[in-house]
Amino acid sequence: MPHMKTFPRPTESNDQENKSGHRRGLLLMLAVYSNPRWLSVVRGAVERLTETVGFPAVQCRSITRAVDEALTNIVRHSYGNRLDQPIASYFRSAKRCQHGEIESGLEILLCDRGRAFDLNTLRGRPLEQIRPGGLGLHLIRQAMDTVEFTRKGLTNQLRLVKYFAQASDAP
Image (tube, rainbow, N blue to C red; front, side, top):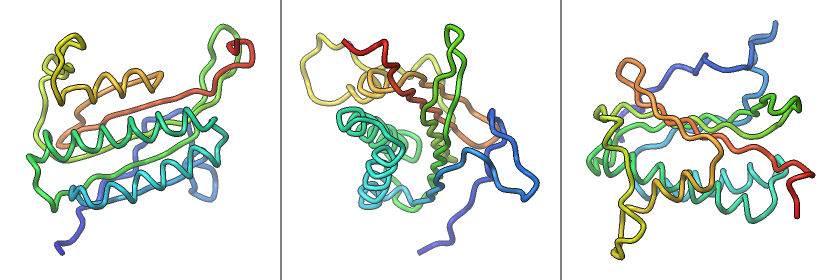
Protein backbone atom coordinates (compact mmCIF):
# COMPACT_ATOMS: atom_id res chain seq x y z
CA MET A 1 0.00 0.00 0.00
CA PRO A 2 1.35 3.50 -0.75
CA HIS A 3 2.41 5.79 2.05
CA MET A 4 -0.51 7.75 3.53
CA LYS A 5 -0.20 11.45 2.80
CA THR A 6 -1.12 13.19 6.01
CA PHE A 7 -3.02 16.41 6.56
CA PRO A 8 -2.12 19.15 8.98
CA ARG A 9 -4.28 19.31 12.06
CA PRO A 10 -6.98 21.90 11.52
CA THR A 11 -6.42 25.11 13.44
CA GLU A 12 -9.54 27.09 12.60
CA SER A 13 -11.71 26.20 15.54
CA ASN A 14 -13.11 27.60 18.71
CA ASP A 15 -10.77 25.20 20.51
CA GLN A 16 -7.39 26.40 21.73
CA GLU A 17 -4.26 24.40 22.40
CA ASN A 18 -3.53 24.06 26.09
CA LYS A 19 -0.08 24.31 27.65
CA SER A 20 0.65 20.62 27.12
CA GLY A 21 0.02 21.03 23.38
CA HIS A 22 -3.18 18.97 23.29
CA ARG A 23 -6.24 20.40 21.59
CA ARG A 24 -9.21 20.73 23.88
CA GLY A 25 -12.24 19.38 22.19
CA LEU A 26 -10.47 16.99 19.81
CA LEU A 27 -12.12 13.62 20.37
CA LEU A 28 -10.88 11.48 17.49
CA MET A 29 -8.78 11.64 14.33
CA LEU A 30 -9.00 9.04 11.57
CA ALA A 31 -7.13 8.74 8.29
CA VAL A 32 -8.23 6.18 5.72
CA TYR A 33 -7.73 5.52 2.05
CA SER A 34 -10.49 6.26 -0.43
CA ASN A 35 -11.25 2.55 -0.82
CA PRO A 36 -14.94 1.91 0.01
CA ARG A 37 -14.00 -1.12 2.13
CA TRP A 38 -12.50 1.25 4.73
CA LEU A 39 -15.70 3.28 5.03
CA SER A 40 -17.24 0.63 7.31
CA VAL A 41 -14.43 1.29 9.80
CA VAL A 42 -15.28 4.99 9.85
CA ARG A 43 -19.01 4.21 10.14
CA GLY A 44 -18.33 2.01 13.16
CA ALA A 45 -16.18 4.69 14.80
CA VAL A 46 -18.76 7.43 14.16
CA GLU A 47 -21.57 5.29 15.52
CA ARG A 48 -19.66 4.52 18.74
CA LEU A 49 -18.44 8.10 19.12
CA THR A 50 -21.93 9.60 18.76
CA GLU A 51 -23.26 7.09 21.31
CA THR A 52 -20.41 7.89 23.70
CA VAL A 53 -20.90 11.66 23.56
CA GLY A 54 -24.61 11.21 24.27
CA PHE A 55 -26.66 11.53 21.10
CA PRO A 56 -29.91 9.51 21.07
CA ALA A 57 -29.92 6.39 18.89
CA VAL A 58 -31.92 8.00 16.06
CA GLN A 59 -29.43 10.88 15.80
CA CYS A 60 -26.46 8.48 16.05
CA ARG A 61 -27.79 6.69 12.97
CA SER A 62 -28.49 9.90 11.02
CA ILE A 63 -25.06 11.40 11.83
CA THR A 64 -23.37 8.11 10.84
CA ARG A 65 -25.37 8.02 7.59
CA ALA A 66 -24.46 11.66 6.84
CA VAL A 67 -20.73 10.98 7.35
CA ASP A 68 -20.96 7.81 5.23
CA GLU A 69 -22.71 9.74 2.42
CA ALA A 70 -20.08 12.49 2.59
CA LEU A 71 -17.21 9.97 2.44
CA THR A 72 -18.87 8.16 -0.46
CA ASN A 73 -19.14 11.48 -2.31
CA ILE A 74 -15.44 12.15 -1.66
CA VAL A 75 -14.50 8.73 -3.07
CA ARG A 76 -16.76 9.07 -6.13
CA HIS A 77 -16.58 12.74 -7.02
CA SER A 78 -13.41 14.16 -5.50
CA TYR A 79 -11.17 11.17 -6.16
CA GLY A 80 -12.97 9.69 -9.19
CA ASN A 81 -13.20 6.25 -7.49
CA ARG A 82 -9.41 5.94 -7.04
CA LEU A 83 -8.82 3.59 -4.11
CA ASP A 84 -5.49 4.87 -2.74
CA GLN A 85 -6.14 8.52 -1.89
CA PRO A 86 -6.14 9.92 1.67
CA ILE A 87 -9.19 11.07 3.58
CA ALA A 88 -8.68 12.58 7.03
CA SER A 89 -11.50 12.92 9.56
CA TYR A 90 -11.38 15.07 12.68
CA PHE A 91 -14.05 14.85 15.37
CA ARG A 92 -14.26 17.61 17.98
CA SER A 93 -16.66 18.81 20.61
CA ALA A 94 -18.44 21.96 19.45
CA LYS A 95 -20.06 24.84 21.28
CA ARG A 96 -22.12 27.80 20.18
CA CYS A 97 -24.18 30.49 21.81
CA GLN A 98 -27.73 30.39 20.45
CA HIS A 99 -30.46 32.66 21.84
CA GLY A 100 -28.35 33.34 24.94
CA GLU A 101 -27.86 29.63 25.66
CA ILE A 102 -24.66 27.62 25.21
CA GLU A 103 -25.29 24.60 22.99
CA SER A 104 -22.90 21.66 22.78
CA GLY A 105 -22.46 19.25 19.94
CA LEU A 106 -20.10 17.41 17.63
CA GLU A 107 -18.06 18.92 14.79
CA ILE A 108 -16.80 16.64 12.03
CA LEU A 109 -14.21 17.86 9.53
CA LEU A 110 -13.61 15.67 6.47
CA CYS A 111 -10.52 16.55 4.43
CA ASP A 112 -9.39 15.30 1.05
CA ARG A 113 -6.93 16.36 -1.63
CA GLY A 114 -9.12 15.59 -4.60
CA ARG A 115 -10.22 17.88 -7.37
CA ALA A 116 -11.62 21.29 -6.53
CA PHE A 117 -15.38 21.76 -6.83
CA ASP A 118 -17.47 24.64 -8.01
CA LEU A 119 -19.64 25.31 -4.97
CA ASN A 120 -22.55 26.14 -7.27
CA THR A 121 -22.57 22.55 -8.56
CA LEU A 122 -22.94 20.99 -5.09
CA ARG A 123 -26.66 20.29 -5.24
CA GLY A 124 -28.55 17.09 -4.85
CA ARG A 125 -31.08 16.24 -7.49
CA PRO A 126 -34.65 17.49 -6.99
CA LEU A 127 -36.50 15.27 -4.51
CA GLU A 128 -39.48 14.89 -6.83
CA GLN A 129 -37.34 13.06 -9.41
CA ILE A 130 -37.80 9.40 -8.63
CA ARG A 131 -34.63 7.51 -9.53
CA PRO A 132 -31.61 6.11 -7.68
CA GLY A 133 -28.72 8.33 -6.61
CA GLY A 134 -28.28 12.02 -5.95
CA LEU A 135 -29.91 12.12 -2.52
CA GLY A 136 -26.72 12.06 -0.41
CA LEU A 137 -26.50 15.83 -0.06
CA HIS A 138 -30.15 15.99 1.00
CA LEU A 139 -29.53 13.33 3.67
CA ILE A 140 -26.44 15.17 4.92
CA ARG A 141 -28.25 18.53 5.16
CA GLN A 142 -31.26 16.93 6.83
CA ALA A 143 -29.12 15.19 9.48
CA MET A 144 -26.72 18.02 10.35
CA ASP A 145 -27.20 21.54 11.73
CA THR A 146 -24.22 22.94 9.79
CA VAL A 147 -22.85 21.81 6.41
CA GLU A 148 -19.98 23.94 5.05
CA PHE A 149 -17.65 23.18 2.18
CA THR A 150 -14.39 25.09 1.72
CA ARG A 151 -11.18 24.68 -0.22
CA LYS A 152 -7.97 25.63 1.62
CA GLY A 153 -4.95 25.39 -0.66
CA LEU A 154 -5.03 21.87 -2.11
CA THR A 155 -7.43 20.53 0.53
CA ASN A 156 -11.20 20.20 0.31
CA GLN A 157 -12.82 20.53 3.74
CA LEU A 158 -16.35 19.51 4.55
CA ARG A 159 -17.44 20.70 8.00
CA LEU A 160 -20.47 19.03 9.55
CA VAL A 161 -21.86 20.01 12.95
CA LYS A 162 -24.69 18.50 14.96
CA TYR A 163 -25.84 20.06 18.23
CA PHE A 164 -27.67 18.30 21.01
CA ALA A 165 -31.42 19.03 21.06
CA GLN A 166 -32.41 21.35 23.87
CA ALA A 167 -34.81 20.00 26.48
CA SER A 168 -37.28 22.74 25.48
CA ASP A 169 -37.22 21.42 21.88
CA ALA A 170 -38.68 18.10 22.94
CA PRO A 171 -42.42 17.55 22.26
